Amino acid sequence: MGKLVQGRSKNIDKKTKKAVSTIIPKQPGSQYTNEQRRAVIVDYLVTGNISKTADMNNMPRTTVTGWIDSDWGHELLVTIRQEKEEELDANLTNLVVSSFEQAQDRIDNGDFRLVKTKKAIKHEDGSLEVSEDYELKRVPMGGKELVISGGVGFDKRRLHRNQATQIHGQSADSQIKDAIAGYIKLYQGHRVVSTQKNCEVNE
Image (cartoon, rainbow, N blue to C red; front, side, top):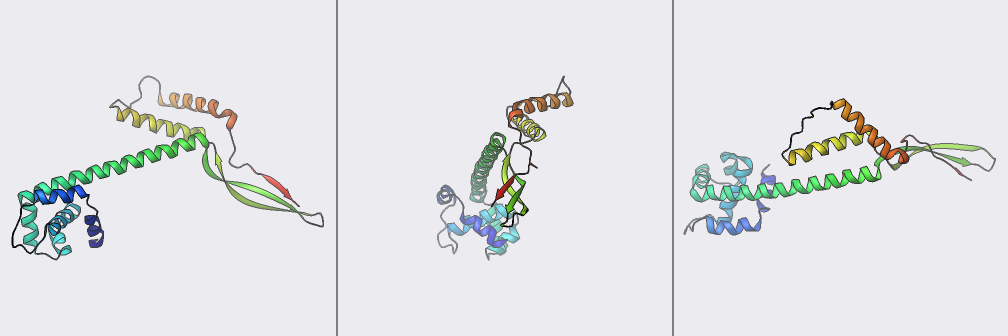
């Protein structure tokens, strides 16, 4: 845990390190550097425990408590917390964008499935040997999968727009049936059965 938190402490953005010099007042004669004070504040922000923070940094608990309760300690906590929230928000945004791109790719080009195949090998004596194997192929998503993907995306979009997600008027079953019918019609000419068996003859 200590190594993990200390690793996180080293990853604080440069602008936070710059803010340290302006937030923490000069303390002539102190045995501790501003870098140590910053590390303590970050470790406390991660652990939420004064005793654990003191042990991790080999410092008296009273020193850590004094720093955290000080005006500059509170200000630095707010600054670092805001920065980490922005960093987390950016990471989550990247995750969402990547997930949507992957989902769209599978809707457009099919999902990856293991398809069972057969290969016939003709021997010199004229006999045939059939071997079975599995091949990774892209298979169009089924109607149920498309409905679920579309429904989740639709609800999340409405939430993002601060719109209601509750279904009124037409029943949920009726809407699902209509959606399935629409997807089936859309993909009717591109349907591939995932259990399709291919057979090749090699001499």
